[in-house]
Amino acid sequence: MPAARAALAGWTFSGELRHYQADVLDRVSVRTEDPLHIVAPPGSGKTLLGLLLAVERGARTLVLAPTLTVRRQWADAATALSPDPAQGPDPAQVSEDPDVLADLTALTYQVLSVLDTANPLAGLARARWCEELEVEGRSAESAAAWVADLARTNPDAYRSGIARRSRRLRRRLAREDADFLVAALHPRARDLLDRLVAHGIDTIVLDECHHLLDHWALVVAALVARLRDAGRRPLVIGLTATLPSPDDADEYDNYTSLLGDVDYEVPVPAVVREGNLAPFRDLVRFVEPTEQELAFLGSHAQGLDVLLRSTFSRDAGLAHLVDALQPADVDGEADARLAAAFGADFAGAEAAAAMLCTVAPQHPLVDLLPHAARRPPTSEEALRLLGRHAVERILPDPARSEQWERIRRALADFGYSLTDRGVRRSRDPIDTLLASSLAKDHAVCDILRIERGEIGDDRLRALVVADFERHGNRHGGLVSAAGALRTFDVVAADVAVRGLFPVLVTGSRTHIATRDEDVLLPALESALGVPVAAAPSRAASCRACTRRVSAWRGWCAPSPRCFPTARSGSSSARGGCSARGGTAPR
Image 1 (cartoon, helix red, strand yellow):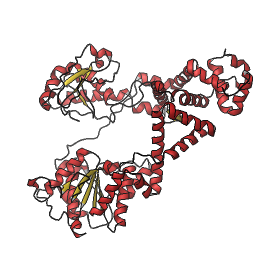
Image 2 (cartoon, helix red, strand yellow):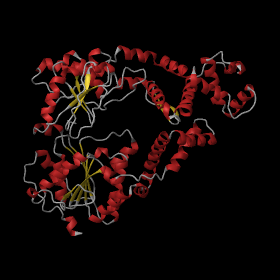
Image 3 (cartoon, helix red, strand yellow):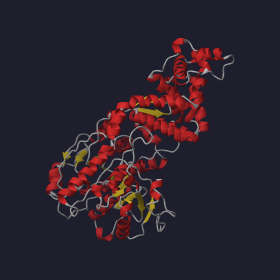
Image 4 (tube, helix red, strand yellow):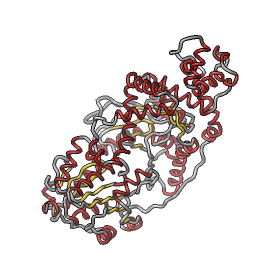
């Protein structure tokens, strides 16, 4: 296929290369069958570098990117290198359409790896679920009956459980059999793989390749294998600013088997020296947990005991204990049913008896229990009881989903996870607390105060980056859920930040402090060129101090929405409001 091998022969770059870009091109050869793995910091020009490597190779090229925005950047940059760029993009030369393949085709990883909506693993996933429940002490018949009942009473929870187990099965099987992975793809994705092979793709550029840890990596590997089976030796070029963590051995193996070792790493000082990256210093500020958090650490064991006892001391929890000791499918007097319960599931009945003696010592069943059973339950017994109660009584009832979520988050505070198979030990509560300590948010305010005093308001430009909008446990013993919302709430309430007009921007919302509304709303409208609407947060205390604006036009929602702001407990922190409009920065 000579035309495919010379598809980019007429592409040129007339600009001036940065020194490190030229060095990469000098040191790296594209005349190889081995993958090229290049690490370069943000702002170093990885897009141009990847394109120039593809142009040097000269063959038809597929670029895979993680988002639509990044995909568009590649297409625009490729058009500038193609012949006659002034005439605009030529669909035969540059395409972002999976149905119209070009000399350089830019797509997202997702388009290539969409799975079929039909789940061929549903039966295996259901069998795996039953096996997991049997490990928890159920009989095979009881486990199968519970799963069937959940499918009827709470289909959403059932579908979620089947989908989660199907994904795990698919990953394992895909590692063992690439053909199985291809068969599990959506028909359009399989057709796209076939057309890419037939099109003569010979270079594959993987942008932000650190995302290639699991499913995406396996699909790309399947494409490379298909190309090799067709008699070609494709060049795979991986570009990233951040190498993935080797913590998950399977995912890291997927990554390294596709890209191998790093062939070239652009040093950060070189990018700084050329003015493409701002000079910086890595500094660390150590903080101690707040007094409330330290108190939680000192009493978390007692708090877990209170949670367990309060769950079983009344209502549905107490009824669960009684039903465990008095099975409904057994005829006879209370003592006969009690004997049947111990005979069918001795460990479960023993745990229920111990908990009943602890939370309801005056219950009539207690007098029928042997003296050895009249004791407090162990922690393991209590947690297993809680898991069984949640799975049997709460999860099947969609109306009790809020209670399920409350118990799940409360247990997470104590280092346990509640799933649709029971309670499991997860993260140590000390690690959980330290990872989401409120002291970190106060440290942000301290840093801003110091910087403000050193360089003044005119020069201060601060960006606070959070990993999540909100994460952690909102119903447990910790102070509050961590994340961008809580950090903004703390920063906006801090006296040291007044006059800096903080703004929180996430992928779905923009928040401003109520006191800054008169300044920031006109500024946002001026910058965006469209009307901007503001609404108070859903917290009741906010409604008296913010106004709701319903001047929504264009792409905005037909009616104003109210977005919650996390609360730190300070009265001045509760005056946050949300603002949306135009194409808000993201």
